[in-house]
Length: 202
Length: 202
Image (cartoon, rainbow over all chains, first blue to last red; front, side, top):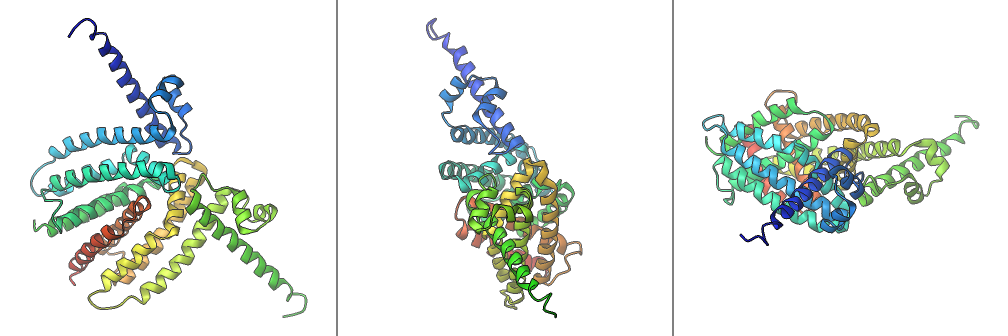
């Protein structure tokens, strides 16, 4: 470390913090106002970042929303990984793992991602970025679910069971956006945990 | 029948046909352009119906989109009911039933309904109507799935199995909006058919 490089650290820190604020504000706005109600102007206002600085880091709304959902998904994915690592072992484990996953699929980040998915359906410019993001997030979630359930997610049989679990959770997450679906979801997950354990011979 | 009532029939027919055209055009536009890209002006243009006539039948965009999705869901639901009634009996029945349901959950009406669900999340004026529509459609789909699988959908056990099946299909439908997911979906449904049959002791 020399005196000429030392001053750059605070600047890098400030830049990192500003980018994080922009991305947090973007996800909040996607959750509150949806994709069409989210504008770069609203984001810079909420994040307390100048329009110029925002445009420097994220030239378009699409750049911003994709980076934001990826960033928050990474953060929440890391939290989920930690929570799954702490899930109880023994007979209640599968149900506990499903509960943690269901919390993930009903959290604000799911609503923000849903806004992106649906917007990408009819916005060609957004489509490719969302497809790549979904592939990445989907692979990660598949891997950590397989790990949490103690199976090889690439092996035929367990692979489809993990995929069906995640498709089910996606469907439950979607149902929960219109009505508070917690009681029904709990019963479905009770039954699903029993199904998973039976399939895995537990 | 008298000569004074006879001329009214063609007018009623014309009104019914005009309403049907408006609703078909609305669902097409929801699929192509999404909720935010669908305007009453575009709908009246595509349906070939005057603005005045359209506003007479559907005073607001929300009235129009909810009526349209309900109408098309009813029509497609009737088609699904007929198809399920013709599903083969015997060992392949569960898989055949799942295939027909999956076709329903990946059809354009699913994309149109998805646009409404997601818009309703952030549009309070749309929320109640979509919640009521979802309850109605959800009840119907639950009933016809239970019937097709030959179970009592109100009995604990089969009820959760039917619900999980529909949540899974909703998740598969959502996954399919971003990428063409047909091969993966087929494998998941193969596995799920075996699980359903095992759960039902078949």
